[in-house]
Image 1: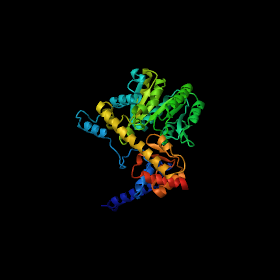
Image 2: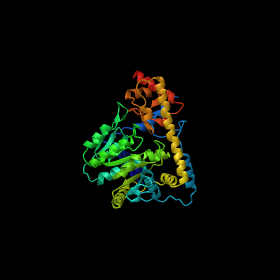
Image 3: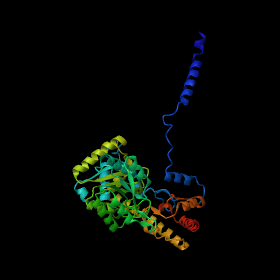
Image 4: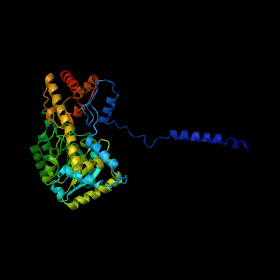
Length: 431
């Protein structure tokens, strides 16, 4: 056997090592990619979890917590879970591209009302989406491709949920803002809102929170909704409602849907993104729906067909589990009644915490007015605290909230609300 033959394995190993070394020196295709900043809310939650202080309080996350500070699986959801598991007729086959039909129909009925003209006239369509986020994206993507007013901007409230801007800019649309929060009154800046609607180009798109505005907790009154509708109708604007808290805000499903139903009565075409994360506690199951109200059955069918085409290319078809739970509850009279009771439990606990926090601040004589705590509605309260004050709350008191002063009322309970009020009192007086 020749010398070269004897050393072939060693030579091959040397050649392979040399080849790997050369490849390691070659730059990646993605060297130019910049690291993205961490999501504010998820980063806040990570910081809270890493904190070892016994009195730490998490007021950042937008999820319901019990009096004991624990997540709550709704009793009606547990019942629906059991029914689904025991149903031998269910399988794991693909859903249709637009989703589970009983779920879609029930979701439309929930937001529009059983007697809605849009439903009886066949003008209301729907697409099951990946929760409310997916519903906003699905609607935004459709508008970016098919909205007839070329170059139309989407106006979002200032402030709003951070994902709104990201979603619409992500589909290539220009995003502008309309005034919403009045820091002087800690309420709605209706004059500024209507002024922007009047000055915006005809046919602009306005993203609107129908109830439990995130992050402010400030909602228009019924009379103010009428003024908003008057202005939008006169200017030919397109309303896109993002409804994440129906029934969770006031405890009444009908009351929380007032604005949407009023706009339907007025004859608007519109999109409504619906999330079942909060009002069903199905945060991880991503059950959502995009309701479409069109001028005619023909137009509705065309919109659904284009959404189905787009959805096929992105997710192919939506997941079944969360939508089955929601569909079962919404389509069963007994379970529906139990769900309303569960909603009332969550809404009333948050309302109670608003009152307790307000009373504690008044008792402490904390400088400023705090009636906005009880005037606001839903999961969040826009406290009016400044970023420097929030910094002290985090570092000195181990209280975690977003830098804009938004707190999740669900994070408060009888064990920590007094501590939080004392912390607020300190930062207001000293910072």
